[in-house]
Structure formats: C-alpha cells, structure tokens
Length: 237
Image (cartoon, rainbow, N blue to C red; front, side, top):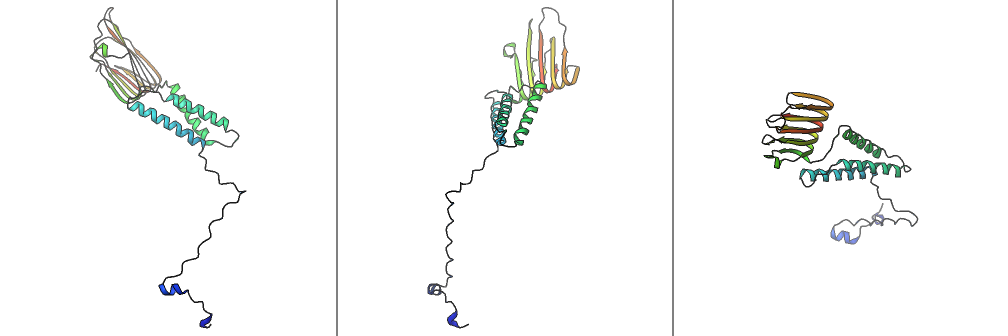
C-alpha cells in the first residue's frame, strides 16, 4: 500500500497534537404521537392504608407520651379496619389484594384481643405514680394505657366516710399501696395475675374480691381495680 492510499489526519489535529473529537451522537428520537407516555408507578393501596394507620397511631402515641392529650388508639385501629374493608370492596374487580387482606386480619386480631381482655387504651403511656396527701387531692378514677401505674394512698385520712377509688391499666401493672384502714378491694385481670394482700389468683378473666369488716360509722376505702393484660397488686405499703 502506497503512502498516497493512506488517510491523512486533519491538519488542525497535527498542529495541536490532540485526537480529533468523536462524532456527535444523534438526539434520541421523540416518541411517536400514537404512543402513550409511560404510566407513573402506583403505590399499593395496602401500603397507603398501613402508612396512614401508623401515622395516626404515632401521633396519638406522641400526644399521650407528652401528656398533651389522652386519646385511645383503638378508634384509629377500628377506623383502619373499616378503611381496609371499603378498599377491598372497591377493588374487588381489579385483582388480588393479599396485602390488604393480611392487614385486615392483623387489625381484626388486635381488636378482638382488646375486646376479649377488656383492654382500654386510654390515659397515656409510660410509668405514672400518684401520691395524694388528702381526700381533696384524690381523683375518683386513674387510667393508664400502657405501662405501670402506682397509687400511694397511705397518707389518705378517710375519716368516717367510705372513699371509692377506681384505677385501670390497659397493658402493664397496677400497684396500690393502701393505708391502715378497712379496705374493700375488687380487682380484675383479662389475662394476668391479681394479688390482694395475701390472696392471689392468675389466668384468664381473673376476678378477685377481698372485703374488709369494719364497724358502722368508721371510715373505709373501696378499690375498683382492673388490668387488661398484666398484673394488679394491692398491699399495705
């Protein structure tokens, strides 16, 4: 092959010593007018409903933990179950919805357990302790959703009347310290243990009453206590 048959590089590349730039690629062709644009990715309906339930439950949890408001999360779960049912009815013709079905089953189990064990998630979350020093400082009802609730009533002077105190815990432990006065105690536990002084019972649907005999005209303390799942303890401190 002669030197005249070989391709000579451009003159500007010889002058600068640089390789010639690569050829420009043609721009991508625009989609034809008859071709529809790609559809946006749809988020599964089960994820949307689960996210809404978790968001609402988290907000209620935060309000209860910061003592801003005391709202039971059970209505949120019940509302979520209704939303799942409506979504299944509305989407019954669009295909399978295994995620919604699993979510509905989980919500049903939680609500059924709350109903069977009489769990009332009201009153906040955490450990709460109350020690009233007089009858005027005493509340007639104490509630806690999840955690330990401790009532120290040893400074209460009942006088000649009967003081009734109610306390309830959804999930956790309820401890009551009573003064050296006649005490009529009635405690229940959907699932757990009840201990009143030296008497105890445990299992499902525990119901234990320990009355106290006291002469007419003397003061006494009447306790109505309950826990959904957990333990109730009454002692003399």
